[in-house]
Length: 195
Ligand code: HEM
Image (cartoon, rainbow, N blue to C red; front, side):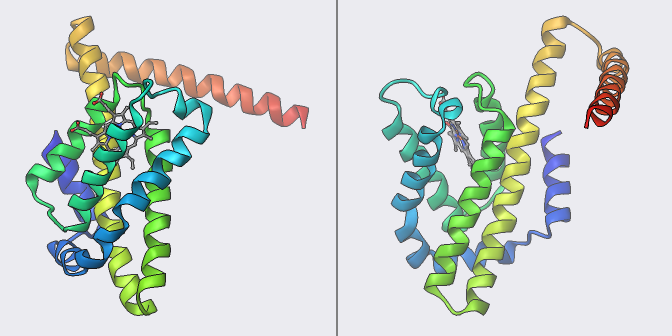
């Protein structure tokens, strides 16, 4: 499951080991941005009540450290099978802490935007683009792995809890989704009549 998802993400984003190499070459500069990334990340999360509510009292320093370690690992270009597997696990770890993928994807966008700004300030446009795109491809694969790890972890746990066979669960799921889509269509017809 993990390997197939990783393979598709690598193929479709266009990530190659050259990206890890590019990142490792610029590490002496990008590593200096780690504290700023950790602070900016948690300033956004603590300023928005729904995401602030995820955290326990006094947890911020530990979380900032985790984010800093993660950022430095990416910036170092230390990207191997173990790193990818860790990203899949982050998706699972986010489940009991109620960190859905809209929160995660919103923050990945912030991380990428800040990285782009920092690159533009540090290098000429050509080099800035090269470093940014390497970072973007790695972090897009990361976002895909966290999202899929989260979703498939959820499904697997549900299947185990309910004791369903996979095929039965898939069939029931399809029937339920058909109903949901129909309900949504009716809703959009109604709301277009109201406008
Ligand atoms: C760019 C997006 C994100 C990345 C790359 C990321 C990465 C990580 C990593 C590496 C860990 C540590 C996993 C481990 O222990 O091995 C973690 C844990 C955690 N993350 Fe995220 N995360 C992201 C978004 C978020 C958001 C948006 C929230 C909250 C709104 C959040 C809340 C947490 C919490 C509470 C934990 C601690 C889980 C625990 O140990 O109990 N994360 N995350």
